[in-house]
Length: 281
Ligand code: C2E
Ligand code: CA
Ligand code: CA
Ligand code: CA
Image 1: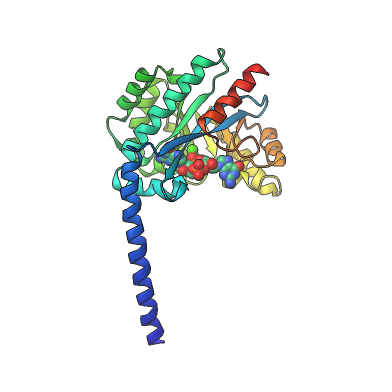
Image 2: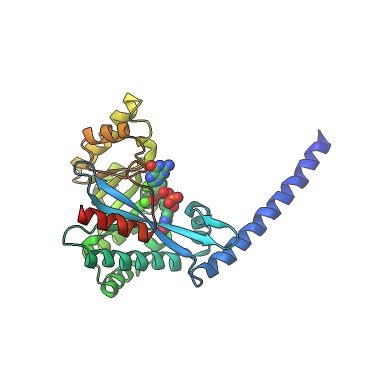
């Protein structure tokens, strides 16, 4: 037993070294990704469940890493957060999303262009100058403030509540929309939720998954929509994949939905085609 224990130790060491080296390589490549235009935004529609209209699109970061293909965000965003690179990446995401959204607003008839939703990391929210950055990007790109929604996860909001409230108030003053992302997974204190100047609750996919086959899950989702109504917040059901899930959420009076049922995230060209087809038909 002793020997196999020692043997395992060696294997463990090698694995650690391997993953450490991979980490360092990832970090180096990520550092140059911005400069070499390897980052892209894809967009996923958020639809009005009553009319089917695309009222907003969420910007989702994609990295085309040479030799690795497309790297999903959950594989590199944590590294970007630890190294602080997320500040530069996040600023790029914000500017790029606003720039492209401004294009939809100038290219489509009045009222047909969707808002754009951008995900924020904890580090961005901690930056004292973050609201000034958002104001500068809006001014520079010409996107109206009410066409931008900033998504912040419930767990980020709850981790440093005082900073979050300060920052959200500054952002709210600019006129942008604010959404609580992944709601239901972050152990919100309802007292705090009430004091955050947010507009939208995004019900985490975990709650939506079972609504079509489990009465309890459906009632929980309904309760979150009800909570939203009480706090004057609009609700988005995330990760809707089936017609049945959609029906349950719609009949729960959830206003908005997002998920593969409506559309997978697509590149800017694909989204533009979709938006133009809604204008023509
Ligand atoms: P999120 O903000 O909760 O985004 C929704 C995720 O769910 C996206 O994954 C989307 O592709 C996926 N999704 C949407 N509908 C469905 C569905 O019907 N079924 C399933 N199975 N999945 C669905 P993605 O693009 O891999 O992004 C993962 C996470 O990475 C995001 O979760 C967000 O937390 C983070 N992220 C993405 N882009 C950014 C960014 O620009 N900045 C920051 N800080 N985080 C980002
Ligand atoms: Ca999000
Ligand atoms: Ca989410
Ligand atoms: Ca999520």
